[in-house]
Image (cartoon, rainbow, N blue to C red; front, side, top):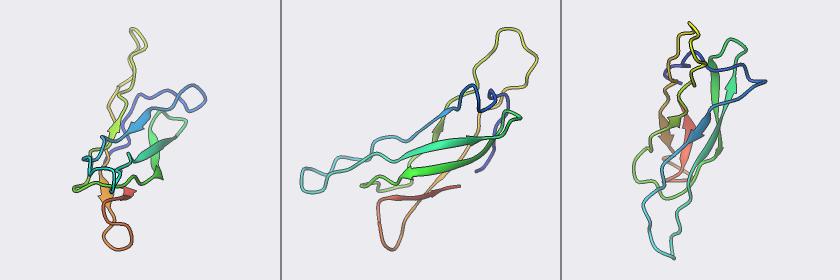
Length: 102
């Protein structure tokens, strides 16, 4: 992960959504599927890591990794910074599928 962010609530309350865009449509002979992932949180409100739950299929380029922005708590002084990560596509066994999230 590039940056674990800051200001997320502790994992007991909420974890941010991790989403990927849809891969390009390749027709019915080559159906594309969206990659999915989840955040593993630290008690401090930072993301420890992102786990890939499904690599998807049909990506031509590494997709963006979209991580929810920390929500404000109305007037708190907690510094809020969104987490950042990049997707890495598989090159050998499963081309066009996300292999991991860095």
